[in-house]
Each structure stands twice: as structure tokens, then as C-alpha cells.
Image (cartoon, rainbow, N blue to C red):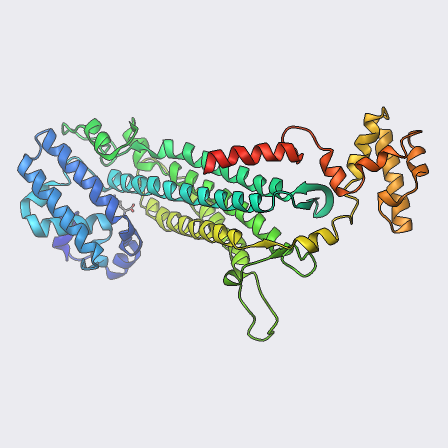
Length: 459
Ligand code: ARG
């Protein structure tokens, strides 16, 4: 086996089998085959461009790499732990086909800049996939917001009823969060889209390579300027997985909310059967397992972020083999968030709000109290005085077990003489909601504008 190694020259005898198993990465980095081949093809073209290969040699390499890609995609390439990683497998498959011409491909290149280029190409596509999934989720939320535009929900702070909100306002809140996630990804993509190839092992190369040529071939925006930096740089992996973590946390908070809202206690939501499971013992159960797993799997994503941050902590320049450990965390975080986003969008599309059940209890919890306080402010009562006065009115309601609107006019006149009759215009949840007017609030006219704007943006 020593003959197949790309670094066997200075070694005598075989590597210990335990070391082979301990150091391999082919079991997980085979996922980079496509990017590895694309980057190698660009590298070969560049080598011909600067006369380190002939045009014929580059053509042979280009075509053979396409063959190898086909072989891998058909599941025909045999993987061996002894060949360490995907880069070595592909290079060896090339040498098997082309002999000495194949042995020229690695000219002016190291696996250190090769692996990071592959991971950057992979991450760039991964960002684009997540972005599309985020758009799908936003569209699903928007569809739901349009279906339930007029529905009034209790808005919560501390999971206690606070003020009324339109269901559409509630759903648009998540669209905003996922929009920030998209912006963060777009920003991360800028740092991903910088060419690393051509920095070689750590110091560059004495060969006359043309990095600008490779940049153009691979569609990178710019070229990394410091070779030592490149071979140790995993910032973009950490950054991407942070962005994924925040998406996972946004999903987890929403999942928790909908798990609660689908309980008998809340009874706000009817989840689609296809996204729920039953109990092996209790025949009546319909469990929100998909939501629970979206919430639960966020732990893996955040754990991947922790793993990556610890991985790069204390690493001296430049490449260290530790860095091989970045890939499983990266792949797992991507797979988890990608699947969670896809399921979230589908689940939302199939969920119904139980309008009757929500309406039956919407007047509970004094959702109109704050609007009443602001009504008094409009009548010239200082805010702190109005706050105190409405607090006392609520106490009366609690004693009588009634709503604010059920109190006698005299109770309101006691706060501000002569308002007893008018006050009815802001009491009750519908009136309270209609009274909102500030930009970004749940005021129906404001929400309608936001809905319109998102429709234009997303559809
Ligand atoms: N499999 C290695 C990785 O993923 C490739 C780079 C190996 N470089 C080296 N100098 N041993 O990081």
C-alpha cells in the first residue's frame, strides 16, 4: 500500500493499521468529491495556461476527472481507508488512468489549500440551498398570514396574555427573523467566496501559477492574500455554522410555541395528520413529533458550533491535522437545518388555526388594558397615573370576575370625569386592536402594508 500514498517517499514500511483507521477522513469527506474534481479541473487548466502542463495533458486530465466523477456517482469507485481522504482517492484514480500525466496534477498545490477550496465550494452551494429553503419557509408563513389575515390572537410576554395581535402580524414576525438569517448568510457568503487555491502548503510556491485564472474558473470574487492565513482559516466554517445555529434557534422557539398551541389547554392549532404521530399505547394521541424534533435537533446544530469553536481554539499557524475534524460538524449542521426548514415550511402550509376556539377565549386576560391606559393618556392623564388607575380597574375586574367592558361607566369616570361613555370604543379586543397606529405595530392598516410588501418581495 505504501506505493499508493501521496507522501510515501521518505517512509519505510507500512503505517500502523490503527493509525490508518484513526487518521482517515474518506468515510466523511467523500461528500466533497464533486467540488474536489471541479477545483482540480480548474487547477489543471491553469497549469496549462502557464505552461506547467501542455494543453493536451490538461485536456486528458480534464476528461479523466469527468470519468472519475461518473464512476463515483455510479458508486463504482472503491474507497479504501489506506488512501486517507477524497483528495488522494481522486488523484490516485487519475494516476491509474493517465500514469505520469496524472502525476503532474498536484503541481503547485497542496492538500492544505485543496481541502479548504473544496470546503469553500461546498459551503457556497450549501449557503445557496439554505437560502432557498428559507425563502420557501417565508412563503409558507406568508401564505398562512394571508389565509388568517383578520384573525386576532393573544400576544404574549412571559407566556402571559399581553396585548392583542393579528395572526398575520405574528406570522410576519417570523418572516422578519428568517430575513435576517438570509442577510447573515449573504454576508457570510462574501467571506466564503474568496479563492484559497494557490497558497499551496503554507507559504505559496516557487512555480509560476496564475491564481487569477483559477479565480475566474471557479467563480470566486477575490483571492486570499496571505498563504499562511489560508491554510489555517476555518473562520468561514464557524461563521456558517453560527448562522445555521441561529436559524435552528429561531425554528426551535417557534416549534415550542406551536407545540404549546396544539395542546388541549391552548387549542389554537390543528396540525396536519401527516406531520404528527400516534402513541403505541394511547389510541387517542396525536403527537407533534416533527415540531419536537425540530426543537430537539437544534441541540446538534449548536453542539456543532461549539465543537468547531473548540477545534480552532489555540491552533498555531498554519495547517494542523486537527482541522480535518471540521467536516462532520459542518455537514451535520447543514443536514439538520436543511431538513428542519423543509419540514417546517410543509407543516405550516398544512396547519389550521382553530378560529372558534381562539375567539371563544380571546376576551380573557384583559388584552385591552394597555389600550385603555393609552386612551386615558390621550385624555390628558399622565401615563403613570393612568397605569395605576387601570391597574386598580383590573383589580375590580378580578374581584367581580368580569372584563373591563363589564365595569360600570362610573368606574371610568372616576379616572377622568366624563369619559365613561367614550371608553367603550377602546374596550374589547377588536376595539383595542383597531386603536393601534404606530409604524411596525399590529395596527391592521400597518400589517396590510407589510403583507403587501412581503408579497412583492417573495412572490
Ligand atoms: N484530509 C485532510 C483534511 O481534511 C486533508 C489535508 C491533509 N493535509 C496534510 N498535510 N496532512 O484536513
